[in-house]
Amino acid sequence: MPVTDSAVSVRNVSKSYGQVEALRDLSLEFPRGQLTSLLGPSGCGKTTLLKIIAGLLPASSGTIEVGGKAVVGPGPDRAFVFQDFALLPWASVIRNVAFGLELRGVARSEREAKAEKYIREVGLAGFEKSFPHELSGGMRQRVGLARALSVDAQVLLLDEPFSAVDEQTRRKFQEDLIALVQNENKTFIFVTHSIEEAVYVSDQIAILLPRPSRVHEIIRPSISRAQGLGSIRRDPEYLDIVDEIWASLRSYVE
Amino acid sequence: MTIHGYKLPMMSSLLVWGLLWEIVGQLDLTFFVPPLSEVLVTLFGLVQTPAFLRALSTTAYAFWVGVISAIVIGIPVGILMGKSRLLDELLLPWVNIFLSAPLTALVPVLMVLFGFGTKTIIITTALFAVWIIILNARAGVRNINRSLVEMSRSFGASPLDAFFKIYFWAALPEILGGVRIGVIRAVKGVIIGQLLISIVGFGALFELYSSNFLMAEFWAVLIVLFALAFTLSEFLAFLERKVAYYAASR
Image 1 (cartoon, rainbow over the protein chains, first blue to last red):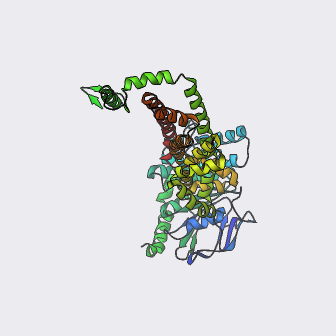
Image 2 (image 1 turned 45 degrees about the horizontal axis):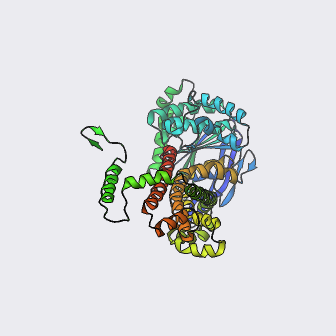
Image 3 (image 1 turned 90 degrees about the horizontal axis):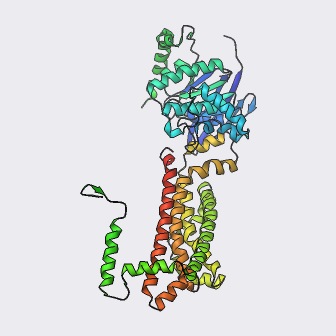
């Protein structure tokens, strides 16, 4: 396999909250144009790591580089998709999607044109004037996704984005996500606690173990997606990897 | 409430109480309670007199200036207190003290400081209203969904953007609740101020009517004031309900 360059590099990052050590000396490379999952039991610091990469939390020590530049705070090269969607309840879908651009000072007509494009892309055409409380959970997360896409960041950070939507919607999201990784030339960092979800959508899976968090193992599933997405879940390698990950995680659950 | 299948309109129980007042008045039990009909007749005559209209306009002026200053000062201070730990530690004890303090006792001091006129009444009005507005704006900001704050930071919001595009709107239901209670308190403030100074606005009227035992006029002015205060409060409650629809989905 060819060595791809990294869009995001995490080097020797530690994070402690007072006495509590959340991350210890964690290093990880995120290949450009691919989807990397951060997988682990709850409390393993995967969301903490994601927020440090986003620049929302400072690391206690170590460095993060995105596109070769050190992270000192939030930046236009990264966009975040939130677990609870984080939509403005008082704003319409189109204003929510355009909000990232609005904060960057993009003119109204321009940002709304762009927002409309991404609203169509995530399948919400016709809902531009709706308000978040009128939408289902799945549709709200599509708004969150469209907002992250519309700022055209190189790196998309997704914090358990599908955990608050129902199972069927979730499956559709997972298929859409795979298509998105293939069509958009962006790097995706995806936090999940679902083993099946991680194996299904990922190019690379980093398994984190808790207290304090470190990378236990990196798995690169080489499941062929050529026969269509429907066959992934029947692929023997998919099943083997799911079993293997569960075997290494089960002792940490409870 | 429904009686025999007829739905009674809101507040129709007032009719019963009005009738009771009329009966007590007609029985001539005490000169303090003239019949309601007499009061109402007086009311319609009174509201057209220049003295009443002048009292209404000076009161309305002092009231609105007081309320608007309380809002303009209270909302930003409350939001900043909700955001900044330091400011909160500095100001919260004072806000709580003044919220529960009997502010009426301060009015004589204000009279000495600011004179026996509109200025003192405006300041009294603002003092009655501002504390609850501060406290509610603060509570609104503290209850804000953390991920909205993180969202705005992650998309590069400046502190000013965050203030005007996130904090203000997120706290709006609480802010409006505070403004509504503040306005009700301001009505008390403006009337108490005028009563204590007793040479301005309705205070002067009350003084005039009660010292000359003109009870019908006295009650008429009181009814007008009660009705105005109630209408104002209901209107603000209506506004509050209009923005409440999104409060649940935060």
